Length: 145
Image (cartoon, rainbow, N blue to C red):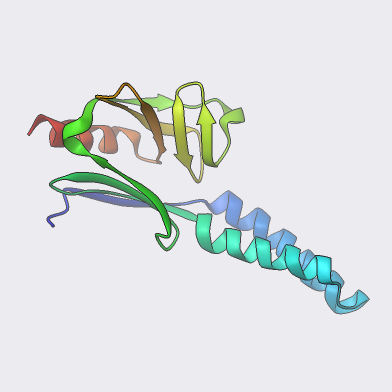
């Protein structure tokens, strides 16, 4: 598998916010005693940090692959099924994570920039990135082959 493109975007703002919330939760549990509900909130925050703090995009000879965090959650697209791509800017309210939008499913960890791909099936997807033009060019070059 020869990689034509690979980039990892880190969701720094999400990391900072969740780490602050995590620190407060640990602080309160340390000073006010153990609480099962608080413990589960801490576990959920830690799992979210591990799973969704970064998004990696890889293009090889056959697929465009995206994966969150360690790669348990992700998606792959056959390059031969992509018919169009363009760099776009999402509205702020589309948010981060995996979202259903009027323009298809969005995969994003930070910011508002993305690349929208359209599949032969008519489905659209948006892939969040901090380098939309480079990703658009890499997809465009890969689907022309």
